[in-house]
Image 1: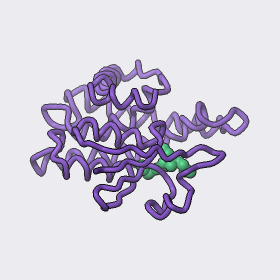
Image 2 (image 1 turned 90 degrees about the vertical axis):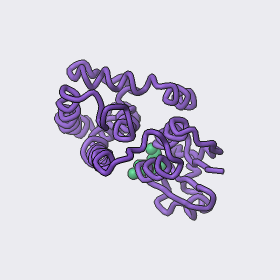
Image 3 (image 1 turned 180 degrees about the horizontal axis):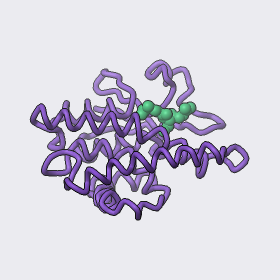
Image 4 (image 1 turned 120 degrees about the vertical axis):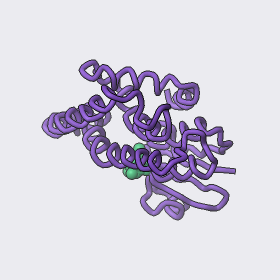
Amino acid sequence: MLKIYGQPRSRAFRVLWLAKEAGIPYEHIPVSITADKPECKEPWYVELNPNARVPTIDDDGFILWESAAINLYLAEKYKSSLFPTTAHGRGRMLQWAFYIANDVEPPMIALFQNRVLFPPEKRNAALADASEVQMVARLGTLEHHLAKNKYFGGDKWDMADFMVASVVYTLAAIKYDLSRWPKFQAWLTASIERPAAKEARKLRE
Ligand SMILES: N[C@@H](CCC(=O)N[C@@H](CS)C(=O)NCC(=O)O)C(=O)O
């Protein structure tokens, strides 16, 4: 059976959400990333993932890490109805997966860490502000797309949408004010209200 490693309050959430979307049975091993005694640094785990971070999966002996790679792999392998069936659909999925991972996630995480996650004495306010400026510009790209299209994929919410939603979920989790991007806000709300998303959210909220 598929094993998913990583505490739910981490990027492992993205994989738990995908497993529920695709109806994949799994065993969850909530490897911790806490500052005092992180299980993700223990030798047995580093043997699985030399990057010593979560998530990692063990799919009947096939070990994979990096949340985006894991989710694209699982959706294809388990024939999720979210996975596009055409080359154009897969191209669109990859476009959004790379855009969100390369351009949106880094400033979003820097903002989250320096405004919310880190203890106040460790926060860098200037970095948070600069990251927010970058992130805001890039969320504008998402709003621009949704002004003309209902979804990031094709004519239905598919893996392109999942790849975006599973990353920007953080904005909903920290209740970031999205009102200046009304289409994006409505799309994100609908995404995280999907039955599979609600089930996955229960694991972390
Ligand atoms: N690009 C990686 C990032 C993994 C990552 O940074 N995971 C964090 C949790 S969200 C972690 O394990 N942090 C613990 C640490 O860095 O020690 C992915 O998407 O899987």
